[in-house]
Amino acid sequence: MTVEIQNGASPLAPDWLQVPADLNELKEPMWAGSVDRNSAGALTVGGVSVQELKEQFGTPLFVMDEADFRARARAFKDSFDAAFADICGGVDVYYAGKSFLCTAVVKWVEEEGLRLDTASGGELAVAARAGIAGERVALHGNNKSDAEITRALDMGLGRIVVDSLDELVRVGDIARASGRQAKVMLRLTPGVHAHTHEFIATAHEDQKFGLSMAADTTEQAGLSAAEEAVAAASAHPGIELLGLHCHIGSQIFEPDGFALAAEKLLRFLAAMQEKYSITMPELDLGGGYGIAYTPVDTPRPAAEIAKAMAAVVRSTCAELGIDAPRISIEPGRAIVGSTTFTLYEVGTLKTVRVDAAASDNGDAGNNVTYPRRYVSVDGGMSDNARPVLYDADYSAVLASRTSTAAPQLSRVVGKHCESGDIVVRDVYLPGDVAAGDLLAVPGTGAYCWALSSNYNYLARPGVVAVRDGFARLIVRGETEEDLLNRDMGA
Image (cartoon, rainbow, N blue to C red):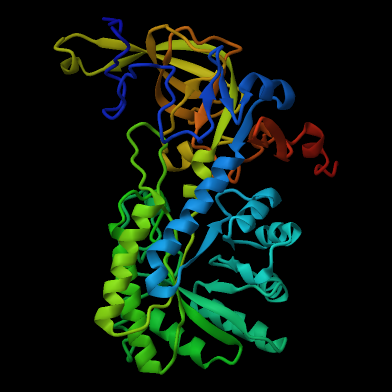
């Protein structure tokens, strides 16, 4: 038996997805500050319409609100400086470049008073080309090459975040061989559980990052890897031990995990300083602050996160009787994620019938099916791999016009030869969406372009920054010629 949907509501939709009262509404806080609709109903950003953007730059296209990026960066710097002013004189905010990086963004970051966190030699190359001072740059990574370590030393990086005992020795030896000292922070795994996807939770023991704080009872001394690293770093002539670092995961909404990690690291820092008669002047509490990908996501303002973390640092340092270290944090997604939407053009559409449990409708004993519409766009998993990697949820709106048509449960899919090529798994879109319409998917500033690929030989999209009625490319979209230039022939 086929059941038609009344008023748009579908039993196939996940429990969290509600039928919007107005399909044309742009729900905060998923969108950048300047995104609006013009008198014709088309989406605009920074005063520029999506039709203008499509005509000038094509689709798919990453569209970034530059003023919104700057405002979010400034909010983290100002909020954390204010919250920690009486504790350690302010906070060093490192923008996590892995979320999205290009030379223009590095310049914005520096102009707004932030520093830069990198995770590879390639990201260091972007930093160098942008001209940011080396002392304002950090290098992460669980498997840094000797060349990357040497490059970091040559650039005079402010910190190298060391991930293992083996790497600690290599960094120290390379620095000593060139007559230098490497400024090092030790990345620890504090065992704090973050309520996030397994693959982006990074503080538990069974994963590749960091030095465990748990004592190793198989060793005679019973020292943790973290303590072994403190002892080794403080004794190595090629190492200047700045302090400790942790990162508990990504896309986290509640401040509790950050506060608990801060307390555990402060207690460990105090114990190590006393035991080894050293001073570690810095403590980095990482990033991982969540953003809104769907209407039910509830991100915390930067000021709220800052106050919660400051309260714990203040009380713990007072209890331990220690001077507070200089605190640093590493927001990436929380700065760039919501500044950007991806603009797609709709191609083919089809509606399928999906079996549903008869008990959901009171039709026991009958085979009940419901419609689901597939809306294909001109991008896909090559420009947003997060749904297939992390089961990430996104939203979407009709961008080129408004509509009064009834809502219809839809699945926005890409053009790749993969059944898992899903951009938005479940969303209500107007029933009259048609080929040639433009869709906008918000929240794609972080880990979308950065994770993009050339699967099926699709060229990666460009990135446009829009501000005050002017749009400019900050990353040129690839061409087929770009792809073919790397093919060396038979």
